[in-house]
Image (cartoon, rainbow, N blue to C red; front, side, top):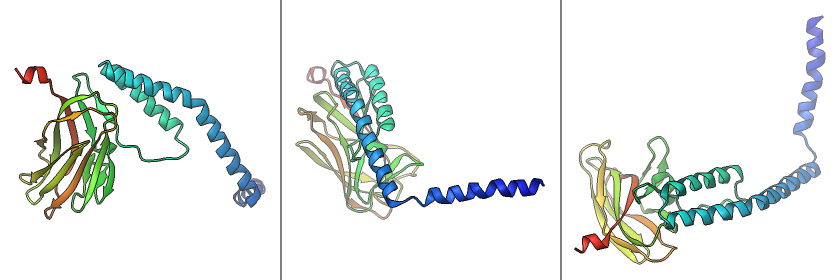
Length: 231
């Protein structure tokens, strides 16, 4: 008797599942239209809050209150995950600030073109073997002079040439492969100035050896105190 009961109750469940998968085209269209309309209204409700957060974040950055700016940034990222934009477009990478006034450009936040890829397990940008570029947006960084330091890894058969472009500033640099891949290396770029809000930090791969130019971990931007350096 128990076996018959199980069969009787499982059959309608199977039929309902099959019917649910075979929705009429008209019903699917209605559902899609409803979901799109709901997403638009939900986005409209959050839009004033998003704008207020953006303004607050810029205010905290300009006033030098970096810890508070980080807290606002985390809320902006949480909101972005909760209410994704209707049209998802790549946004040049997030710049992270610390309590010492430095800014960090992480590999995972770069906008990539060409052969360069983000390797999630190692948190590095790899495949610097052909033409390609990595870009970070500097719009939230206060105007001033900065020193950029490249944090990277390069084995004995790696290395090559990269180009750096920051607004009107540009330069070409050589990466020399040596030691082991696990060893972290640094390269200081020439100082540059930010005088406008729409600068981007762009590294381009120009020429590479057999194992690629490098594996990029991050870039550190350090404000330069001109008053002290000129004395």
